[in-house]
Image (cartoon, rainbow, N blue to C red; front, side, top):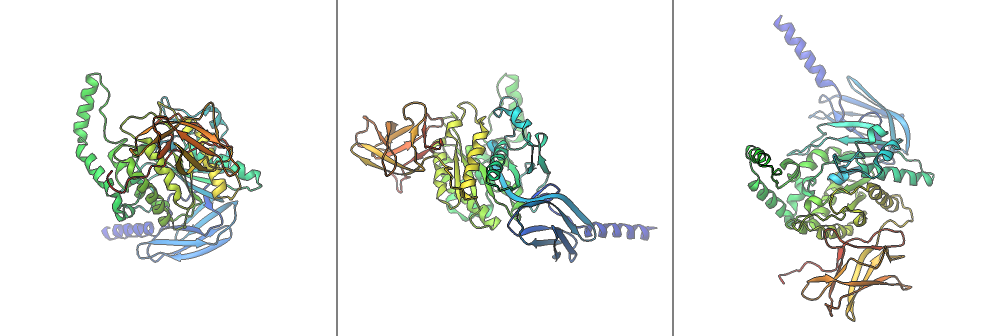
Length: 509
């Protein structure tokens, strides 16, 4: 009897081991990247023969000693629906798969914010109508659950699986990503290009950029060592769970608000590399079209904003290295306007994002004009998605369109004023009144509010900035306060980005 039971258990174990499996990113209704080799991978028993068939294409592989297998199929144009079948001792079949463009959407809460908004008082403009209209069968959605890990994972812990874009599925999906895909697909259709679009929503509100960057990238850059010092300081100040619960209970008993913590929503979400490991690494074997990113608010503290001009480019180059697709298109949002607090410097953070445009194949959607002074989550996510789609159309789909607002090029002093030149400056104008948002500083680097006007010339429009309080200005900046009054636009009605001509000192002043 014991022998029979043992044999049955052994047979069951071998059967289980032999079953082929794929990561959770593979399911019915998914999008695979067109015009790139199709990568399919997973696990099974070591030494097992695996066969994958997709759209009349077939290839085989043998699992390695760890049970991993990987199959590539030739690149195919946009189209579908097709069926993917993976066969070993068992067979897995996924249907209604489209070939199109796959975009990875990531960042913190402004990218995470769904069409249905954040309860109780943070909503998307015209949310009910936008949700009701969200019927796009060739837009497919994949949302993963929040997770953190100490090491890079080969698969996500949990996810909702691929779904067709309908009012029911879109309402809980990233509004920015949805509006981006909707506007992009419509624009491509107007050019007689029918391209399905897939969106991977990998987001977690309140999280800093270092949590989304791999440990290898963070550790290889000596200038980023303050990331780890900041983490250590926060951990030293963080009360134990038991102590925090006691403080919370005491505050409620005294009619006070919950005591503040050094991070939100929890320490794991701020751990360097933890979100990269759990929410990015599993997708890097998958060919994609590009990345859309909306993050930065969590790095805006006075003690950390100055590091973002090094941290953010590191994140981009890190992701590109792991995806191994060269200069993978990386489109991002410059954080908006928000009153925040004197403990944060949104101007410096926004300027760091602007400087990151020095990396090839990047684009920045400016949102300074749609901010909410008292709510960190602007309701007008339609404009954010639209501006990201404009960038994609120009940088990725090669349309000859205006896709960016005025971007600072250079400034020089002349006759008691600063002369400022911009890229994308055609049709430079002030919206709703006199031009405002500019400041100048002298050699002491102390900025004061200044008067500004636009000079139109055949060789390009410029802005002249001066202040009677500073007769010899040396530096100029624009839209610098956390919530600035700034109204410079170009002829495409796209707003100018925050900037400063003052460079960090190379030695103590």
